[in-house]
Image 1 (cartoon, each protein chain N blue to C red):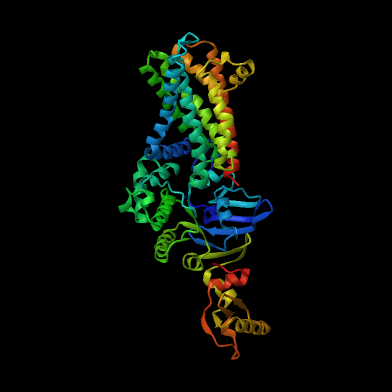
Image 2: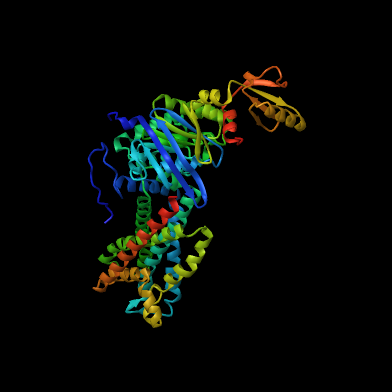
Length: 303
Length: 270
């Protein structure tokens, strides 16, 4: 397949609006996924991440705006786009009474892999997901982590050019999450374009080349994770702990001096702590992170 | 009829997938066939045992009171009639419950529609698969009736095809119902008010000629009645009126199919 200019962009959304009755789930979203990169859609529940994912497979139809996937306009050419895309849904929808291998077999047919290439495609997917020794196991005998790996493998049987991952590690324990991150990172290093929605800060920081912070259906900031932190939250943050009365006092004082702050349950965080003079209250200094950016930009805590 | 007038701008390397294209139908059918491997026993049991019980109960129960109906032995009359019952039960119920469960509980359709498959292909493939099954299951009461004295005839070879045609319509009707209903509990309204009356007023167990005129008129718009007539005539000798029965079943199948696609699209695509 010869590279053409349109191939340089895997996903391009311009001014996309999606309303459900009185609720506007996606509100003028602009989003670009350059080919071969991983873009993280970071936002709290209800920010419009899942709706955006549905728009990209034409399982929801936008009310306004332009959508293009792999150079194909949606929803008109969606079927051709879906043939070259893999989708990992948030909710597990594997066929639970079938074996690992049968689940993959079904998807080699749904993704139109030729007869001669099917078994090789299944082997490759088993290898990627490291499920080779469980190929004969029924899905309802698998652990949560294995099911999630199979869900990803199923989306990769046809070697898609673009993969959509909707909250790929939600509800999994930390160790399993690490495994999946390694799998996704490998995919990215092989040149597959990825759009991943997440509400885990660390996931976005580790995997995404570009993070798009979404809030109320809009992109409120776009950039590399490190750049976003430097630009919006500075280098260091100062965490001041204390009883509620003390926290209120610190917060009022900081605001009076024009220092950017954010409140968490047990502390007040003063951002851009590297610029503070000697009058700063006592507390713990730590590097600023994406979570600081997120809260600063949206005024919302992220779980 | 379904192939859209696609102006083929042959600039794309891979041909643009068309409406109702075969790989999409095959994909959905393969999923059904592979899954059937894990539940065929239960499905075959319920789809064949129930009509057989009707056949035996009516055959022996009424058979002792009634010896002949319309010139047929009662067992011949009921044995051919319950073919349509088997077709109905093995198509409309799996379509109603199966598609609802796959859509709402298992979220299977989300996965299928994320692949290059459209709602139209999804519904068509589901209906084809259920229709194929009911074509086979429909033969069971006839085979049982043969044990009790129904004579074999060449026309019996048409019965699976009649079962397929009627089953396609009923399967599409079932998909339509599952798309219209908000909850699986509401299915009982449809069963009580539509399916049970249709099942009883179809000339399966007694001829509709004995019914009041209004009921006879209603029977004529009942697809199951046309299925019953076709099966009987296939077994005992086709007549010109069977063209009307076939036409009716084709029209029913087409209408239910298009409506099912339309309502499922509304349900599946936001």
